[in-house]
Every structure is written in structure tokens, then in C-alpha cells.
Length: 422
Ligand code: ASP
Ligand code: MG
Image (tube, rainbow, N blue to C red; front, side, top):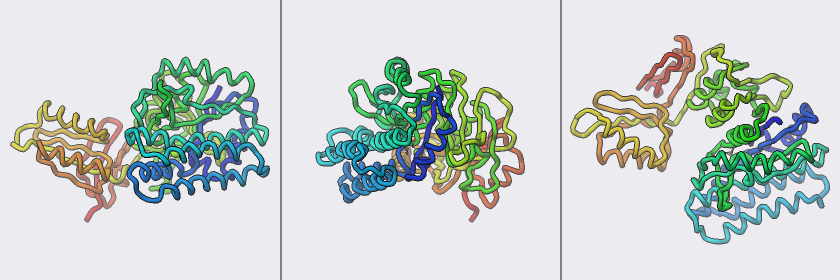
């Protein structure tokens, strides 16, 4: 069995959904588990809905109506028969949101968030499943919450691998006795008390890897709107090159440093079972794309990644003493308690610097708390460039017209925290 993942961009309108059917024509008679994300930008819209509901701001009903209209518009284009059961099924799914927003929130924000935002994946998988059945690509729809169990760490559920594996054998694999294809949701999971959790934004890739791991799948294909893994994000650079093959190790590094093409958590489960991962274009499915496996060939070309909207925080003891283990442990504790992820850190005798994503709520909070104990300086609007397999030309290229505030090099990777030259 192969596991496919189709993300939001591959399901953004009726034409894209029809295109999924075209991609699947290349895989007739093969067993496929297809993991889908919410359609287009639905997750962002559901986040807005959740914010409006929880913090009582904006017109929540209007946001919800826009989400419904977006989906029904697509359904109308896909299903000529207006009596088709899809109309009822999707209406019933949305009723769950109607119910939620009628009452006041009772759970934590994160818990309410997961109950609301998860609907994007439930609806998209329903639409795709029924559409494919309609055009003769017979499949079973599966609620992934019956398989993928997490703890109740809402918005960043941790997978219970043992239970998930047992569930996959009991609830997922038997579905292949009647049909070759199973359609299910990415990004979401369930707790032992049957609450819904999510795995973190962009987590659908990770779902594909989890299901592949638990079923010993032969390979995973992530279908993207780019030809595969490129040496840089085409959003920033136009002469990018496709990397035909990379090792799990390089893929982890690139994803970790911010290459958005694969979710960083995706690789490890696949590496552990030596399952090949392909990144391919849903526009040209016959192209080879990128293969990620355990062959360590080194990258054919330097790869670079930009993270923009970073903040560089420098922390020093108020009494000009050295930064010692105890201060570091306090700093880490504080960052961890606010769930702030460190993108880069550097330690000198009297100060400690961290580069993190700027976040309107968290960043001022972090600074305020640190200032209680330390002298704190920070630079906003900086960017972090990471170059894997760097050379001089690439470093020059990424740092043109930039002022480098901090630099860190290892044998294969260089990272630069920079801001635009004034
Ligand atoms: N729909 C979710 C998101 O937008 C999960 C995903 O796309 O992977 O974050
Ligand atoms: Mg997505």
C-alpha cells in the first residue's frame, strides 16, 4: 500500500479536485491511503471563526457562512445531481459548527480550536471521497480519529504510537478488502475520550508518515504545486533547481530550518522504517519529483532557506556576570513554558542570543518576562537564512544588501541572522 497526501493547494477548487482524479489514473489497481488537508485556505478561515467565537469579536455567523459558501460552491460544480447525498452529508457536518457557536465556550481555547478547525479536513475528505466514487474511483472514507490517537495536548497532539498502530491494523487495513482506496484526513487525531486534537499547522504530511509507519506502507507521495524539493523557495528566487534525491538526514535539516515543502516531523517515522518519500507535482504527475530515502549522496547544489519576520533577542545577566548554566536553564524554561521555538541560539561569555519567529502575542511576553531577570536587547524584522552545503557564492547571494547580525557555521550548514542594510 502507498500513502498519498494532497494538501490544501491541491484541493482549492473544483478543477483541482478533478485533477486529483487525473493523478489517480496513474495508480489504477494499486492500494492507496489518501490523506487530505482542508481545501485551499479553509484552515485559516476556521481559525478566524474560532477566534471570533472565543474572543467574541467580528461577525462569527458571517465567517461561517463564507466557509459554507466556499465549500458548497465547489460541490455544485462537482455534482450535477442536486439530490446527491453529498449535499446532506456536508450540511450535517456544518451543523456541528452551528451547534458549537450557539453556546459559549466551555473548554480552553486550544481545545475549542481543535474541535472547530478540524472540520476543514472532515469536509474536504468527504467531498473528495464522494466525488471520486461518483467518477468511478471507488474508495472508502475513514475517520482518522478512529485510528490516530493522541494525548490531550490540544493543537500539538502527541501520537500514541502503540494504540495508533493497533488501530491501523484493526480499522484501516481491513478497509482494503472491499476497495483499493481509503480517503482520510490529515492534521487531526482523537483522544481516548473522543475529543478531537490537531497535530500542529501543516501537520497533514506528518499524518501521512504516521499512517505509513503504522501500516508498513511501501512509500509515501506528497503531491505539491512545485515539481519536488527545490534548492530554494521559488517565492524568493526564480532560478531554483530541483533536487532529484536527498537523504532523510538532509531532508530533516532542510525542513527543520524552515523549508516549507515538507513538515519537519514527517521524515523521522519514515526513516525509522526506511519508507521512501516522494515529493511530486500534482500538475505533472508523470515527472519523477524528489525521492527522499536513506542514500546519502550529498546535495548536488547548496540549498537555502529564509525565515522572515524573526526576532533576535540578546540576554545578559543584569550584574554583568557570566551567563551560567543556571541562567540558561531559566531562559530555556521560560521559552518552553510559552511554547516558543528557538530557530537559532548562540552563547558567549556574557550573553546568550536566540532567534525565534516574531509573534505578536508571545514575543512581547517573552521579552517582558526575561527583563525581570536579565538585560535584554532585541532586533525585530530580521531574517534568518540557512544554507546547507554552503559555498562562498551562495553566502554572497543570500546576504547581498544585508547586514549580518549573527553568524553560525558548522561543517555543512551556515546560518545568518540579517537585516536590510540601512
Ligand atoms: N489544514 C491544515 C493547515 O492548513 C493542515 C495541513 O494543511 O497540513 O495547517
Ligand atoms: Mg496546508
